[in-house]
Amino acid sequence: MHDVAVWAISGATILGVVLRPFRFPEWIWPVAGAAIVVAAGLLSGRQAAVAAADGAQVYAFLIGMLTLAELARVHGIIDSAVHALSRRMRPDSTRLFMGFFCIAVVVTALLSNDGTIVLLTPAAIALATASKLRPLPLAFTVAFVANAASFVLPISNPANLLVFSQLPQLGPWLAVFIAPSAAAVLCTYGILRLAYARDLRQDYDTSRTGTTLSVDQRVIAVIVGVSLALIIVAAGFGWPVGYASLVVAAIAIAICGLRDRAAAAAVAREAPWSVVPLVAGLFVLVRALDSTGALESARILLRNASAMQPLLGRLYAGGVTTLADAFINNLPAGVIARYAVHGHGISANIAHAVLVGIDLGPNLSVTGSLATLLWLMLLRRDGIEVSGWHFLGLGALATIPSIAAALLVLR
Image (cartoon, rainbow, N blue to C red; front, side):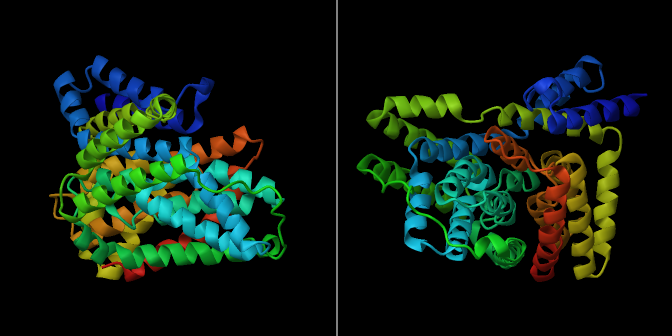
């Protein structure tokens, strides 16, 4: 009965996060699930506290990166850059699409996939409206690049800290993941170009495409840029990236607050901080699942992959992880991977394939990651509907060749 209860609570939690019944916020469900697990005696309070504390660096990373992304959003830095791109590329829609795609890659690499969704989804809709283009080509670019480019750098996705409790230094990271990242990004670009070829053949109107950066915006852009550079340096030296992100972001918001207290207050008020308790709840639930033998099953699966020929093992591990993303979302899948991969006879080759699946796999379905769900909610707020089947159709076209190409060149 213990195992059945844990699985039932965990399953209900995942459904709550994905479906949001009664329109309750996503974070409510993992926190409630973790509380029920402890209250029912399925996990001791001490075990739950230890599990939640294990994610301390992940929480610090999320807070730091969301702070920097919100600083850029509140000051309209990305909006101005996108509109400047529109003026420069006019009136060629193909060039505009390519430029916007490149901006999305850079933003994802430096500000994480969640930052890309928060910053570029509204910008994509506004740009499409101003240029009299269909919004879906640019909108899907945001969603797919947010995942495809999320393992360019260690800081490009919070899930990287979920899978690797101790991130590799920047040099070794790039040696392993830069080629797979490039393969995933190029495949994603090619698929989207083909899928929206008809839309990209038309010229666009640039009559309402915004203004250049103001002096204040340039100052904030420099502060954010220097902050990101410092975080990348921390990754290069192998320092704890999560804590470095938190400290650097705190300094950045303090400096910005000296210039504009209202903007600093807006960052504190409007950033999606609820992702922190959401992840903490997931850590507790995965610890409860471990007591049922679920993680040992995952370890056996990955050990079997380690015993295969390396390429087949990578394809197997990456493919299974992608399917797990589609069914249970990549955050719980990432937490499971954290405990299943390390210290249990799993080869580095397979651990790297699992990370590619965790980061890139969410492009398969709209429920694959919280970033994609956030993207969907932002579109709906502007009256744009994307069905799960529509996303699955285009997602399969983009994800299958992208993840295959990434795993083929993965070391």
